[in-house]
Image (tube, rainbow, N blue to C red; front, top):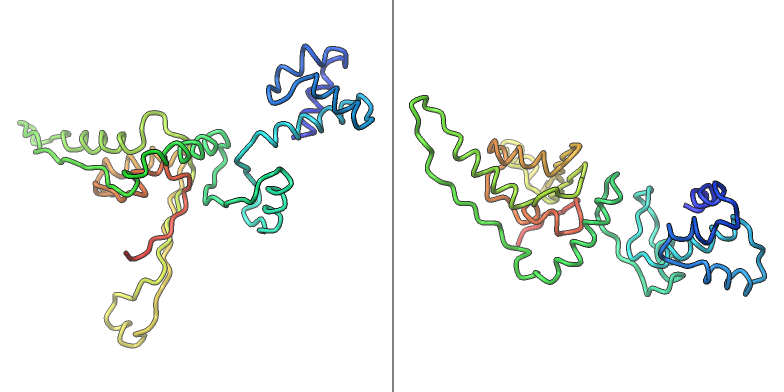
Length: 233
C-alpha cells in the first residue's frame, strides 16, 4: 500500500501535494501530515508522507484482509493492539474481490439488527404447474428463480467459493459399518464459481438444490463468511 501511495505522490510536484494528492485520502489532511512531520522532526519526503497516509488509512479500518490464510493468532493480536483495539476476531471469509468482502462484513454488522430472522429459512411456496398444450411449463422454474433472488438480493457481492464442512458423519453402507462400527468421516462440499450467488441460483432453479434451502444458504449475504461447519442440534 505504501509503495502505491509513493508512486501516486511522485506523479505530482511536491508543492502540488496539498491540492492535488491529499483530497484522494479523506482519512487525513495536509495539516495533520505537516504537523506530524514537524512534531517528529522528519523531512518532507514522499516516503514519510506516504507512511503517515498509510497509518491514517489503516487506523480508520475495522476489517483487515490477508493474502495468507494461515496467519498466527499472535501476529493478528499484535496488529490489533498496536492500533488501539483490545483484540481481533477471525472471519471465515475468503475471496478475490476485496470490495465485495468488505460489503459482506458491513452487511453482517448491519444484519445484527435483524438477529431474530437469522436462523429462519426463507419460505418457499411451490405453485401448481401451468399446463399447456405443449405439456411444458416454466412456472415452477420461475418461482424457484424468484425464491433464489429473494435469498441473495439484487446485485449481490461477488464470492468465488463456498465451503461446507460436516464432521463426524457415520458410515451408511451396512457392510462397512459392521466392520468399522466406530468410524466416522469428515465430508467437505466445495462450490467454486466466478459468482457463487449466480451458481446457487442456477442450482435452485434446476432443483439440484431443493427449496427451501438451509439458513446458511438463504442468509449467505448476511453472515459475513463463506465457510461453514455443520453440527447436530
